[in-house]
Length: 399
Length: 127
Ligand SMILES: [Zn+2]
Image 1 (tube, each protein chain N blue to C red):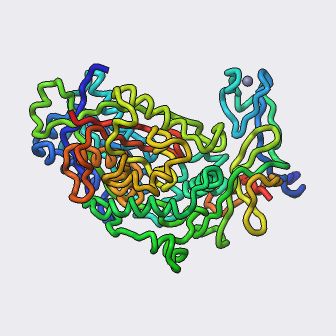
Image 2: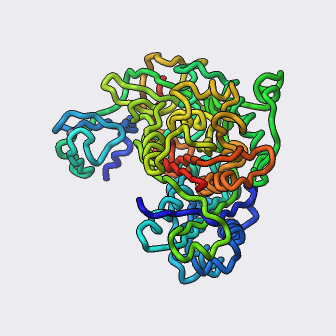
Image 3: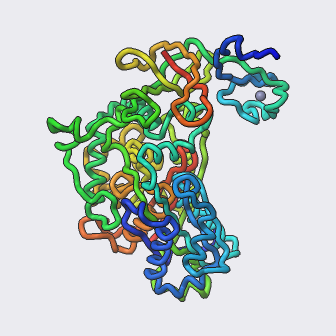
């Protein structure tokens, strides 16, 4: 891959409850923020392609053709614009397709903006809408939802490797510590291990959602958006942008069986392993080169599993690394410095772009005090579409 | 006029599928055989055998989901993943007293469920 493609602008809104706002306005907010970061809103006229990441606006907001709506809202007509839907990996897929658009020579500047407004419906309706990504006949119709799958998955892992519920809580404590320092986080309150695992009232504070998963093992339902501006670093247009590009060194995706039960070993996330292997090869680096990682943790078990599949830990050993503080800021491999989906929130379509925005902030050295990783060189993001069946891995480099 | 509906309700079934060219089994139905690449025509079903997926199976994992939405008039629902003796696996609901035991032999049955809006759907219940 000869193209050098970098990120020259990032935008993000605070995740949380934006249900009183229109979805397209919420996405436009981050697009605007990204142009401001890149040097000014006038730069929108330099964009050759707009890609929008969103999972289910048709169901949540009765809004379709979100990309057309965004271009018009941002005064960017007649710029080409398309919507990218890949479940909760819609955001990272939009970045990947933006990369491909530039690599193909058909564009030099791409705006990727992603968002979801989910809190317009009840919590259960949101869970139900997200569950439509499962196999209709063999999974969704059974009444299964994503927390249900994650519960079954967590139990398997605990049985096989001896992880405890307290280990899950330790991941949540670390994520909430980071999220409390992130201006974009939905949940900005730290939690203690006493409150959610060790204390007398822990069972009440941290109630079961899908056993053995508890509330603090599950991400909240959030609204929000994020945006990045991609540029061909070797094009004359690159000089128009104020910020030094953070290079996309590797970006790759892989798929797995739609039905979770059809995987040879339901505990093995082949699509994570394969997409990260491809991204490592493209970037010419390995797990030891990564300084900071954002790993899709809609349920904390995913943070652990992902950290094993991408090679940070041996299989079945990641929770031991958490016990030793290896994934904290300042640890061997800081994971989910943003607070992750657990604390920062998970507006499904926005998450992949939000993860990349966090990596850019880390690589630029712009993260808030107390959660900036020291002198990072490479950052990795893993974004899940479906229950691990359509995964995008992105590796960013500070040149 | 003969109203066939008065002859009683049909027992619901969920099907597994066998590719007759190479013998590979599937659930749910594929459109292309992973074993030999044979196409399955969902209308004629030619060269494929359809069979009821039910009976004894082994519980691989389970969960108990709390705070169910409207329509589910109970405190919690249990779900599990099972493996049949023919190697096929399925996900569905679990009904038993207390906590299910991983590795235990269950009996897979099929019921019609109507908690969600729309047409009733076929649901595995592992007991
Ligand atoms: Zn075959």
